[in-house]
Length: 421
Image 1: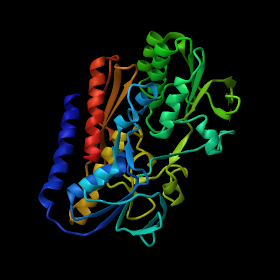
Image 2: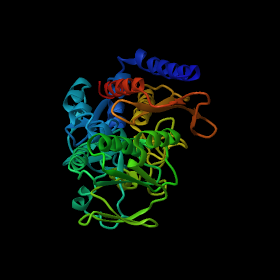
Image 3: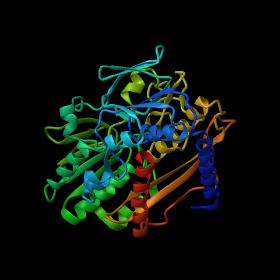
Image 4: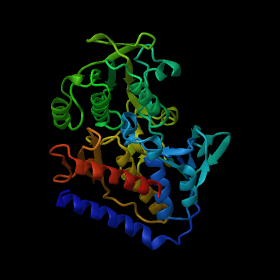
């Protein structure tokens, strides 16, 4: 980590402490409803309670457990179990004195400032929408039903599909073929598909060395850590990985195990891992918040308030991110702190902080223990009214190494603790 980055991070922590410390006794009674308990929603809930304990926070989340998407690729190849990246929401809710509605949000009435979920009508003064991404299968014939999609799982939301893809790999014939697809950007976690490819190749190399992995990327090239992934694939996995760029998937025959591409034609595989194009979560789109290409949600980066709905804030993967900013769990966690600080400041009659600085770090396993990383720092540019990379901050690995594997696991533990307590 470079000196400028340390300076930026210290400034951000100092700002957070200054906001939180003097006002713990304040009482406002404002009601904040949060849709989604991922890195964005859960972090916002926790930090709202820290910044102003008088705020009444209701979390709307149907799942019983928080399951971490980062590190889920390690579950697929067998390095971790799903329980290693899961925590119960019940403990989080109790520790932070939240109201928990364990249901899916059905709708948002912006005029009445009300959320409907599981038969409940939840009034709010401020609403935070953090639903993650939704998956767009409209352009892929043969994957229109849940039953079809289950036969070519994306496993891009950690949980049941993660376990399914793992089981499919374990059942692969010794000389079988695995085919995975990468959607066009933007999508959640730019390095994620290439980390997955590396770990599947590691699994095949150690368990089924006669098998092969085909990576069909709709983009013209690898979208993150390009040189590092290319070097690893060439030196470590040789001919086991075949990478195909500019591969637009148009159809899948799940019964025959065939993928059909615009240019490359039909390809047969024993295991199909189709990661489809992505867009803002369903509740955000159905509520009219996805004002950018009818796909992503525009926000004010000082508060993460929606560009089209007053009093509604959007966090995480659903937003139209600033140029160069990835959709990631770390990014959602950082955005949530800025949003929580802005809301708390407004409830306390304070000015909203005008110079937010946030950071992102992404670790990628390329074998059981070796890791590469990329890190960046972003600051608010008042003239452009968006977040821009901070010059001289951040960095990239020189090569995979075991030490970074230890850092990666420490990062995972720390961000889980920071998000959930």
